[in-house]
Image (cartoon, rainbow, N blue to C red; front, side, top):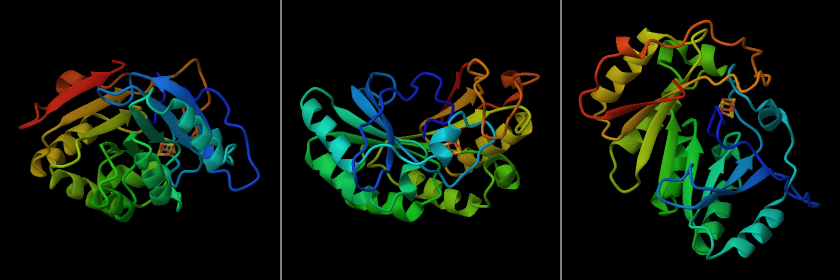
Length: 248
Ligand code: SF4
């Protein structure tokens, strides 16, 4: 799940097999998505959210097009050539087969990065407990009072549990990020998130990503281009973490 997908659009289609099709597509190579690793991106189909700004309605709502076997064949060919695998989507953590799949990919020698909306703390906990994750990118979609408006679901508590879990551990590096479309979120909302991250003693980098209209590609919520960009000069300075702004 990089949820604005501006710099890594799904590329070649994975050949469909005869069994379950949890994979939408594979991007065979990127140096941008997994810090300090060359990697591929596996785009899982299906998501439990319905973010209005999502540029991938076909991934969120559509059926997969590739089997696990298709992807394993691809990964066997790339063994020793790529450092890591990024699990994106869609939302990989809602796929029941994820833990078993990650175990197999990890055993092949790949590092694993998980992009997640954080609504399955039980899955994250299990993967971390089994030492299967090397990096996590967690979307902080919105403050609790706006969470349903932005994502379509009431799952702030579950997200909050994941954020707590990550902030209280030191073994797996992680980043927190928010995509902003100013029809949905404003400076006050980002300030609320910064204050929350301060309270939780977050120590990493907080990325604020400007919604990218992406050549008027349709969004899940049929959002129009933003009438204004977020005023980043109006945001407070975080206590103990860095902030970076993307696409501003
Ligand atoms: S609906 Fe939201 S969480 Fe799901 S893939 Fe799109 S942007 Fe990500």
